[in-house]
Length: 285
Ligand SMILES: Cc1cc2nc3c(=O)[nH]c(=O)nc-3n(C[C@H](O)[C@H](O)[C@H](O)COP(=O)(O)OP(=O)(O)OC[C@H]3O[C@@H](n4cnc5c(N)ncnc54)[C@H](O)[C@@H]3O)c2cc1C
Image (cartoon, rainbow, N blue to C red; front, side, top):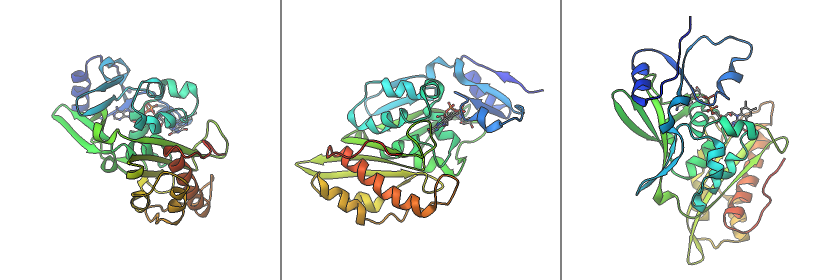
C-alpha cells in the first residue's frame, strides 16, 4: 500500500523525508504524465500544504523564489528587467492551465534537457536551496542538474527555494523558444540571454541554450564575443561566428542534431537582439 502525506509544516515534511523514501509532488504536471497508464507505486509527499514555500521574496542580496511558486506566479510578479527572460519562459511553459499549477522548482528537479526554465535560470546565475532534517546546502543550478533527469538532490532533501543573487539581476534579458508549432510544444531549442551595457557597450553577457545538450549550457565563447560590442546589428554577427562548443545536440523525433545546431545559433542571435533592444522576432515555429 502506498502512503500519502500532505504536511503543513516544513519541518514535518523534512522529518518524513529523513525517515523513508518519498516522491515529492508539487504541480504533478511532470509526475502524472510520466506514469502513463501505470499506477502510482511510490509514497507521495504532497508539498501543496506548505504555504511558506510559495511566492517571491526579496532579501538585501537575493531574490528568492519559493519551491511552490508557479509559472503563473512568476509571470505576474513585479520583478526587475533582468528577470524578463524567466517571465517570458514562464509564458511558454505548456498552457495557462499548466502554468497555473506547475512550479519552477519542479521544472528544475525533473531535469529534462527540454526544461524551459533551466536556460533562463542559468543566465540569472541562480542557485538552489536544498533542505533536509540535517540542515541546508546551496548549489548553483549548473551543479544541481547533473544530466538528463539526474540532479544532485539527495533522497532526504527537498528543494525549498531558488535564489537569484541581486548582482546578477541586472541588465536586460530575453527568452526565445523554437518549437514545431507556436503553443503547447516541447522545445526543439531555446535561448536565454541577459546583457548588461554601460556607456553604450556590452560589459556583461550571459547566454544559455537548452535542448541542445543533455543539460542546458552557458555558451562562454558567445558571451566573450559579445563583451565590448555596441548594442546593434554587430551583436548578431558576433553570435554567428562565435564558438558554441558546449552544444552536443542529438537527433530525435523533434529535430535532427544538425538542424538544432543551426537553429540554436539563429535563436541566440535573435534573443541577443531582443535583450539589446535592437529588435528581432519574438517567437518562431
Ligand atoms: C501538457 C504539458 C505541457 C508542458 N509543457 C512544458 C513546456 O512547454 N516547457 C517545459 O519546460 N515543461 C513543460 N511541461 C512539463 C512541466 O509542466 C514542467 O516541467 C513543470 O514546471 C513541472 O513542475 P511541477 O510542479 O508540475 O512538478 P512535479 O510534476 O510535481 O514534479 C516534477 C519532479 O520534480 C520533483 N520535485 C518537485 N518539486 C520538488 C521540490 N520542491 N523538491 C524536490 N523535488 C521536487 C518531483 O518529485 C518530480 O520528480 C509540460 C507538461 C505538460 C503536462
